[in-house]
Length: 129
Image (cartoon, rainbow, N blue to C red; front, side, top):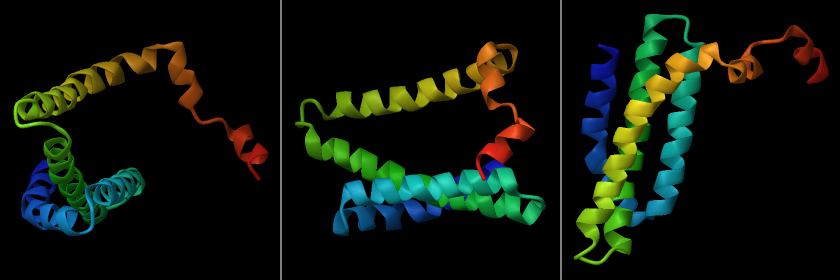
């Protein structure tokens, strides 16, 4: 259901986001979408109830809806007609690679020395005050 909430929200908000990117500007919409998506990820991590989990995923869908149409339109703007399919193919390849490498690196990360950098340390809270 959480995945469906994300996808449905992205589906519903993509046309509006495409129109906004045409009127406000592609770069501004991409940056705003990234900020919205970052807030949604923070909310997902901080959520302590199912309602907040669904709200965070729906907010993430809005963020993705703001990002993807603007990215595709920006690619269409900066490439020639002959190179457009290649540019959009590179974007889709990057997204697909992230879907493959992300979970794989997440599975390997807890077993590495790199993971120790992200483990909570109580004394760090004292230094940050």
